[in-house]
Image 1 (cartoon, rainbow, N blue to C red):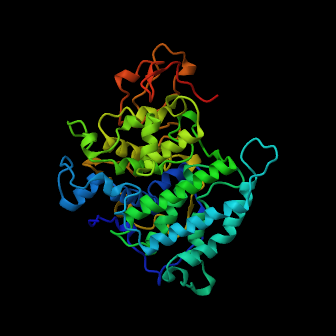
Image 2 (cartoon, rainbow, N blue to C red):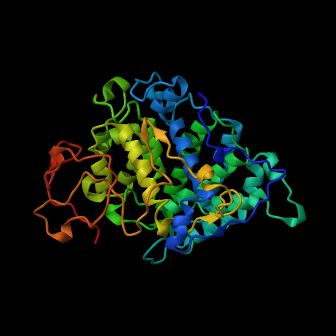
Image 3 (spheres, one colour):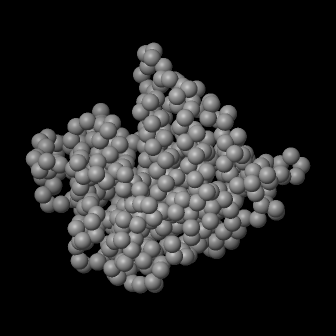
Length: 449
């Protein structure tokens, strides 16, 4: 993999002089949310997200290797970054994290679902959660590198294992609420980033395997937990959310298929690259074909597994995104912007994120040098810390609008939406949306009651 520029917030720390702190809750108000957006912790998270994203994008990899224009046609075939590609190097360090997650998955067999009456979630999840919490410190000591596990702080201070365990334990939903959502997924991203900062992964070697193998194993464990214990969506927007539980597979999955700059005037040639079109997510047979190859299609496939009815009805935002004509690069940029607004910019989601030494809360460094820059992806600015957050506004895909003849209750509530796509003309007629078979699904779009 060609060397990628590394934001200084992702440089490895010196364990011998670092003081670890047990993570604490710091986001308690909207004012705290604004502080989070300029904190070193935010910078580290968003920089890690961008770094992983670029590592699995054929276009970004080509630009890094050649210094070519964003409009150049990449020479890196997309199959090199398919999820199941044999060319993905899985180092021993990465394999150990995969084994750790698999060990946590094996605990499910010890916690059969409760057969008693219930309304939301299965209480047996609390047993799984308790067993996972008890075993995680030992699993971290078993699978993390010795330089991390054998670090002994002076005067009985916090160990790196204790700090990392907080983020890993926060990755599997709430035992109290019996739910799981994007805030828990964020905690897992922080766990991986924490290992990175501690030197547990090798830069310019492990990024693809972290993104395509570790995350994939984690997502499959989450889906097993959701199905086994019927976990509720945490902080869901209901039918108007991108996904009930996940966001990261849509970011990295769209990156995997990005072969052309979104501002190119030429329509993407999907056939020559051997990749699916965005609209193919509405076709179950194509989704099934691509699940093992791509994180985006695997996430959509899980939606087909657990939901019934027309795709446009139960997943209208993803359906809207399927109408993007500028290609996967446009979707990739839009997903990052939406994640920044809908996950990192929403109080109900990030209020549960904790801050310690790996993700600092206090801004002790110069803001202008430490704050996340506005990175460029495919020659387009991807705004991060400079974004203005309005807590009353939801970012959603902008290419669908309430039909003019609809009563207010059938239209979408007032929102701003990610400025990166438009619904095709053929899909604009309400009640005449084309499904996978080419037949039309009658009826208006509906929201969850």
